[in-house]
Length: 188
Image 1 (tube, helix red, strand yellow):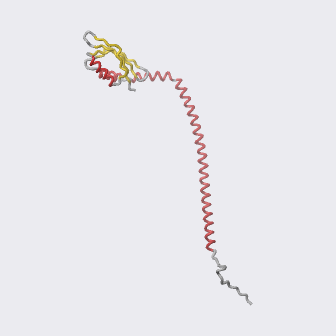
Image 2 (cartoon, one colour):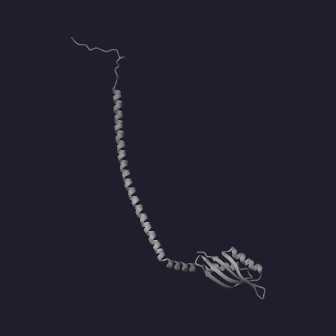
Image 3 (cartoon, helix red, strand yellow):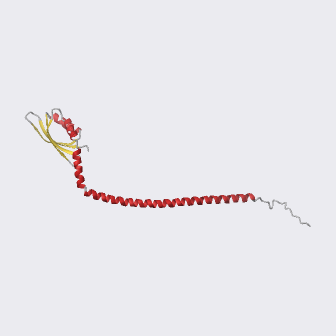
């Protein structure tokens, strides 16, 4: 006799499941994980190499900075030594340049423009200082006190500073002879 296969009709107690879909989804997830892991590993290796290159480059830059700082200190020491060595010569040359660069035309023009019409300068004694100034002593003859005050106001309006009257006398014609000291800032 033939054995018959028994057919189990009660599907509710032991249902038949289609597991192919689950295997397919599981294998797709595993494949995606493997691909993503491979890509992540490749990216990790690539950026690790770049990070190593950047680290070595930073090390070289750090060494360059240290070398540059050392050279800067040596240069500063050398320039300080040179400036001390040549200070007198440089000061002498700068003094000559300052004396040569002074505009006497501008100075005398400003002095002349500040004089009232009836006043005139009798004597003039300029002295160049080491900074950018000229000290000046001069004698001026004014017709009256108003002309003298106008002259002083005109001097104040220009670059003349520290105006001081040293002496003042009247001559036989009634004119005022004043000795004045002042300071003039030069244009460099």
